[in-house]
Amino acid sequence: MKTIAVLTSGGDSPGMNAALRAVVRTAYSLDFEVYAISHGYKGLIEGNMKKVTSNDVSNVIQRGGTVLKSARCEEFRTEEGRAKAAKVLQNNNIDALVAIGGDGTFQGAALLSKEHNINVVGIPATIDNDLVGTDETIGYDTALNTAMEAIDKIRDTADAHDRLFLVEVMGRDAGFIALETGIAGGAELILLPEFLTDIDDVKKSLNEVLSAQRRSSLVIVAEGDETGGAIKLSEQLQPEFSKYEMRVCILGHIQRGGNPTARDRVLASRLGSAAVKVLAEGHSDVMVGIVNSKMKITPLKMTFGKKKDINFDLLELSKILR
Ligand code: F6P
Image (cartoon, rainbow, N blue to C red):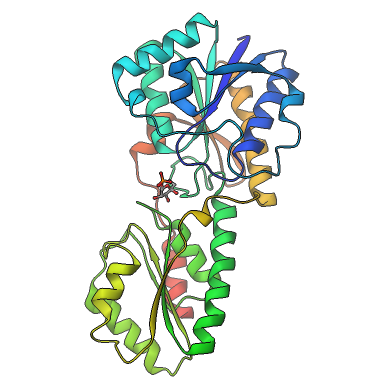
C-alpha cells in the first residue's frame, strides 16, 4: 500500500472535513501518498483528483459541508460507470479508496470492490445515523444540536401564542434525529418512520396532551414518517383540532450544515485515522465504526443491508415525559 484516494459522497454532513484531515495526516504518518477526489464518485469517474499534502487540510477541522464537494452520482450506479472509476484508480496507481459517506456511498464502494477487486474502506458520515456498525455516524450529533436549537426557538413562539406546532426534521428512512431531538426539545409527541403511524392514535395522544391545559405543544415528525410529513399530518389533524392555532415548520437543510460539534470532530478524527490504519493492516471492503466506545470494523454490505434499531427505551421515555 503506497497511494490512497479519498472522496466524500452523498449528502454532506458536518465533520466530513475533520475525517478528511485525519485520513490525509494519518496516511502521511505512514508514508502513503493521498489523492483527493472532488465531487464524489462523479469526480472519480471523470478523474477529477489531485495529490494533497498535510498542509492542504489545515484549517478545515471546524468547517461544515465538505471541501472535497459531494454529489449523488447516477452513473456510478451502473456497471459501466464503476468500470470507468476502477480504470481511473488503476491508471493512477492508486492502491485503495477511502469513501466518506452514507448507505448509498457504501453500496457503490462495495460493488467497486466486488467487481474490480479495488481495496475500499468506508467512513460513516451522514446526519441520519442509519448505518449498522457504529453507534453514531459523523454529523449526527451536530444535526441533533442544530435541530434542538431550532425547536427551542419554535417553543418560544408556541408558548407565546398557545399554539400547536408540527415540526418536521430530516430522516428519510430513519427516526434517530426525530427521537433524540424530540426528547431534548421536550416534544409532546414524536412520529418515526420505524413505526406505523395510526392517525387515530395520534389524535388521541394529542387530545390527552391538549386537555392537560398545556400552553404549547410540539409534535416532532420525521420526514419519512408514514403520515407523509408535517404538512400532510396537519391536513389530517386540522378538522378535529381547528380550535387550536396550528402551525407547521419544516427544518430542512439547516440540519445538514454548520460547524461540527466537538463530539463530531473527535469522532471524525478517530474514524478517519482508523480507516487508513485498517487499510495498512490489509483489510478491505469494510467500514470503520465505534461501538460501545471501541473501534470496530464491519463488512460494508452489513452496514446498509440491515436496518439499525431505534432505541426503544428512549421512545418509552419520551412517552413518560410528555
Ligand atoms: O441522508 C441525509 C439526508 O439529509 C436525509 O435526511 C434527507 O432525506 C436527504 O438527505 C435529503 O437529500 P437531498 O439534500 O439530496 O435533497
